Amino acid sequence: MTTTAPTRPEAPEPEAPAVRTRRGLPRFGGTGLFVAGLVVAGLLTALSGWSWGLFAVYGIVLGTLVTYVGSRVVEGPRKATDRLVTCLVSSAFAIAMVPLVSLVYTVVSNGITRLDGTFFTNSMVGVVGEGGGAYHAIMGTLIITALAALISVPIGLLAAIYLVEYGRGKLKKALTFFVDVMTGIPSIVAGLFAYAFFVIFFGPGVRFGLGGAVALSVLMIPVVVRSSEEVLKLVPNELREASYALGVPKWRTITKVVIPTAIAGLGTSVTLAIARVIGETAPLLVIVGITAATNFDPFDGRMATLPVYAYYQLTQPGVPPQFGIDRAWTAALVLIIIVMALNVVARLISRFFAPKTGR
Image (cartoon, rainbow, N blue to C red; front, side, top):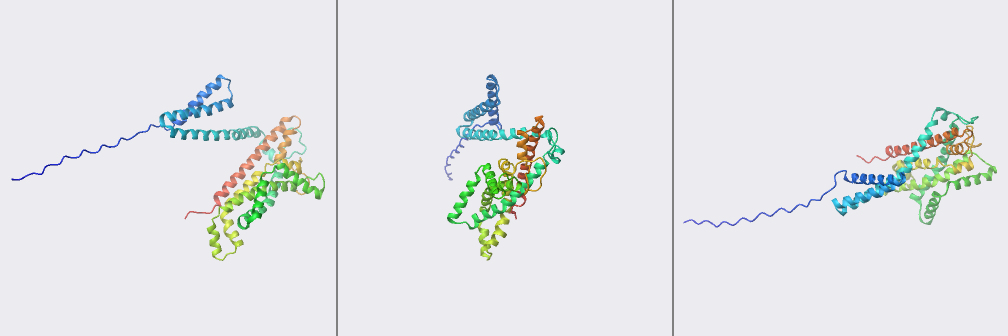
């Protein structure tokens, strides 16, 4: 007689845990809520008398508030806080861009009138009303800025190398402090310094391009020092130590290892420093002055520069005044184009001369 073993009852399968689903806004839900707040802000502004400034204030406040409340109801407080911060940061960026876009639009719309060949080939000799150009001012700006760079770049780079590679103790702290102080001095002080310095040798009333170059170099040197110092600090110490381990002296390590590694950053810092001083007006008004003729000699006589040219064309436009005002706007546009070109050059230097890290 055979007996069968009793079958054990099967254990019930465990139930799958419930999946908690959190609701979320659609892909462009946050943007839609902010736009809804802008629509409400537009209606409120229209009811109280239209004003772009009032619309901007209402739009930022109501757009952020609607986005936060809608996200908090649908997505919860954590995501709502994230959207709130995103709205605040984006609004701050938009506010910062408003004056920049307005400035560029105003200068381009007013300066495009005289942006022709005559403006770049003629000076102001014998011109009273219509016509004339800024050839003499453009050349004066380039000459004086080139001289300022010739003075500032070697001094600034050598000072930065000293602070990073050789400087120690109280002397380094003192030099860093004075460089920081020079970075914040008003530009008119640099012009007065250059004027007072050359008055000692040439007497009162001295006006020439070299004085403007010295004044601009006072403003340019601390910028070169600080930016170059930060670039040199980015060079890894391992490169220096490897060079020292091979018996290479320190000065040769700096010239063959440190500077080539940082050459892209150094070139960028120099280019940005030039862009910083090329538009200065106050020191050039004091020490260089203005002239209607072209002067290529920075050691003799007054020279015209674009910032001073624009200032005098705007404040002393002649009769009828519209021609002088048009020339002033075009000079400002050319100056912006030159600064923009220098920034593009700085980007290209940083891109093409950076050390290659890929294998």
